[in-house]
Image (tube, rainbow, N blue to C red; front, side, top):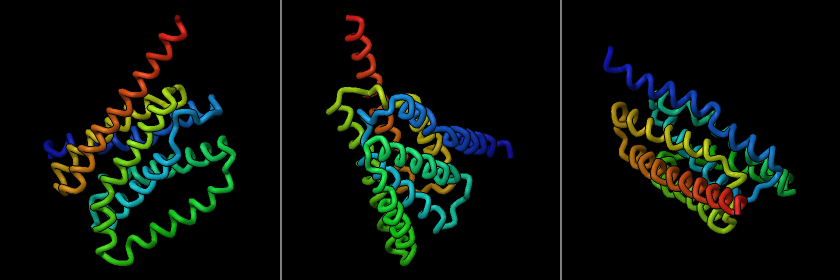
Length: 205
């Protein structure tokens, strides 16, 4: 049906963007070999939110096109986590994090109330990840190692998901999450650009 075309476009474009969403951040980190301005806590919270969200979608048999990007994002976050731990000299912790995440993922589907409770907290977890990144930026006042492009793409995918959720499942928990994430992604993006502009001004002086 013609009316399905905008949904297909939104789903497909979101998937395409998410396939490379973390690549700019990974490239910036590898080039700089420094994690200044990046928050490890933010990344860990984001990973937790992603795992809860995709598990919830799969548990309730939601249409796969509405969440296919999350396994891709989880894999990219995993690479980013390894790089941050490597440059911080804490690579040995990666095994501990892996065990915690795998164990937590298995626990989510043991009982229905567990996954429902986790999903109700998912928005707070994901929001906390954005605030952790904001705090890291405010503290360091340095956004040189933070990719503005990655945050811009993240904002786009959330906007697209607001639309697809509205016209497909209508799940209010999911919809509220994407609205909050859109606003916070834009806030982080604005902060990154602000400190980058300040840094450029200081160099000129």
